[in-house]
Image (cartoon, rainbow, N blue to C red; front, side):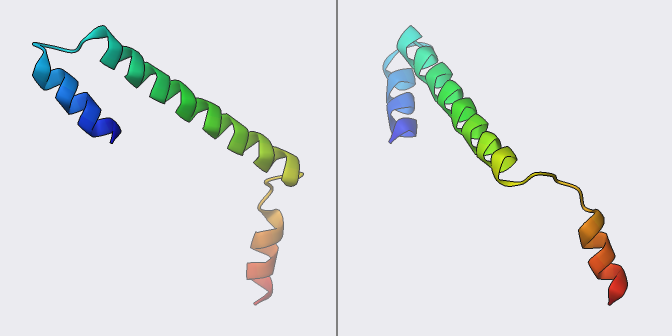
Length: 61
């Protein structure tokens, strides 16, 4: 739906109107906030991202 609004706005005008540019910027900002929340939860749930234990498991086989 977002792409349809974007294409309708660009075809109705001779370029990118300000509202479309602001919409794209808002989409990018929301995406960054969502990625930040995901990374924050990953950091809280896992104490370390050390792969030493996984390498040790593979060596034991």
